[in-house]
Image (tube, rainbow, N blue to C red):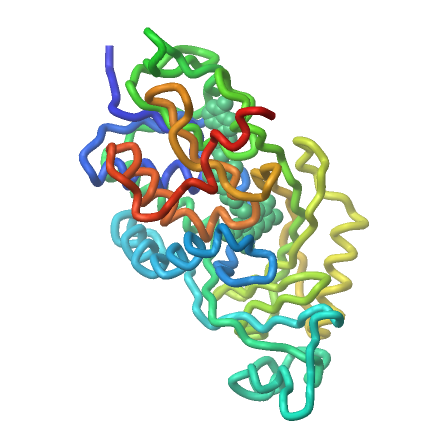
Length: 356
Ligand SMILES: Cc1cc2nc3c(=O)[nH]c(=O)nc-3n(C[C@H](O)[C@H](O)[C@H](O)COP(=O)(O)OP(=O)(O)OC[C@H]3O[C@@H](n4cnc5c(N)ncnc54)[C@H](O)[C@@H]3O)c2cc1C
């Protein structure tokens, strides 16, 4: 009977990034994925690597900053190992803050925070005089990223079981001994739950993760370079890809595990995109979809060892799981190896939910 050093539950970007990191350190690893690898939140995401937004919780800032710094190398390695291209862009973001945040006083204007006049930076914007600022950040195509992570994991010798859900983590003498799936069981002394929005459904620990739905629209612009920067306004964001696609997002909905889109919402996103960039009127609608972010009660990820020896969790990355994948893999691999992680994970401990 085959045994692995570590079983990773869930083949999203978090599960694969961690599996690769563990493999690099010499562990044998099995990823067990319920469906097709990389087809849930990691497929639905926009891919902004926004490490210093107003919404980033302060407790998350050190991990967000560290992960953003790791990205060029993270993507480079995945590209080399998978031989697949990953669209990583570093043109930055133009942010239109909500009116209540626009703070202008004599001698200071938000325009000073732009490297050039808005009309030069993004000529296609409808309102070249609207208060805006520039943020240095990258964006990545999460579908390409996850596909490259899957291919790189295979190439490194990570085993993958797909199309079979883990139903329980098995214990023997109070320690982890593997997992039971709908069809079989797999053996390992260490198991990591990276099952995203579904992480709470696997016994024995009911992590308080919940699905937070986001609907997205994808347009293809006739002019490939219509937009250079990510554009964020209070209503929507626009994320340009290098092939001319422009993603329009999103909603933040408590709708259970329902991944359907609705016409009214998609039309609203479409209208808001055209109001921001009128030329998008001529763009074709390529696709719309919805995905389920792994939310937690305090909007912070759950990272660390559980009370059950050998059982770990890395989930709950909510709106930042693409950004946080490299640092999550790094610190979780250190922890699983028995080392002390480079970052203090106390704020993310699964123990904080023990009494819920
Ligand atoms: C619309 C939208 C926009 C987003 N935009 C951004 C963004 O711009 N930037 C950013 O950083 N993040 C963004 N996110 C968040 C990001 O997508 C997530 O935080 C991240 O993908 C979580 O990765 P994951 O691997 O934990 O989850 P997932 O990708 O959901 O992977 C979990 C996997 O576990 C599997 N699984 C579940 N249960 C079981 C089981 N019992 N047995 C085996 N396998 C199981 C699932 O099938 C799934 O493949 C966005 C999310 C959405 C929905």
